[in-house]
Image (cartoon, rainbow, N blue to C red; front, top):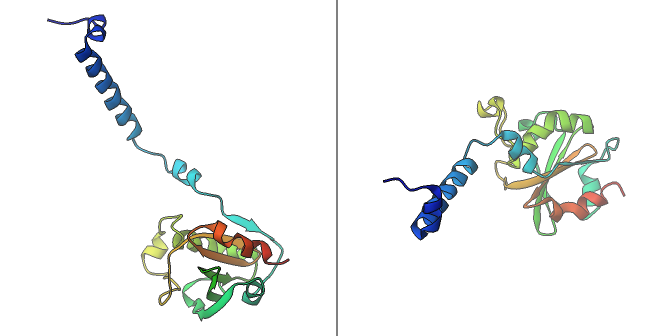
Amino acid sequence: MYLSINQLLVRPSGQIFIFIVLIIALIGISCGESDDSVVESDLDPVQITLPDSVFTADDVAAVGWKKSKELSPETLPGVTSVWYGFYQQRDVEVRVYESQEEAISVGQELADLHSGRRKPSSMIDSGAITNAQTNTRTSYLSYAIVGNLILLCEIKIEDCQPLLDGIGQ
């Protein structure tokens, strides 16, 4: 005995059955494969400012960043120096490059990796590039490029925004 769709809609049990089928269909559609480009678009864009400016760690310290210790630049290609410190009770790492072009072309992939924005490349996976902060906190969730500097900020970029805005002023 088959019931027509009209008969199903009249019966409460039929309404529940149709509702369940629709919910299962929606769940199936929403749990389908996702496109990586969608994940990328969900990320906040990286701030890149002051393209022609060249700064040092001392310029960042002049804005209120507290220098704690210098890290070895050997594990970060293209870096001239790496400093670990604090700004408003947040960990901030400052990576100094020769130019902003160098910071973007060489340093941005590692900054993406260390902030969790990108999966490791095969070069990093193989151990050719390792983390510079072996004895220091490595949980940076955001970063910005200001002139020739890459500043990795703990938690969110808004916590470091006054620091970023003050560099070069």
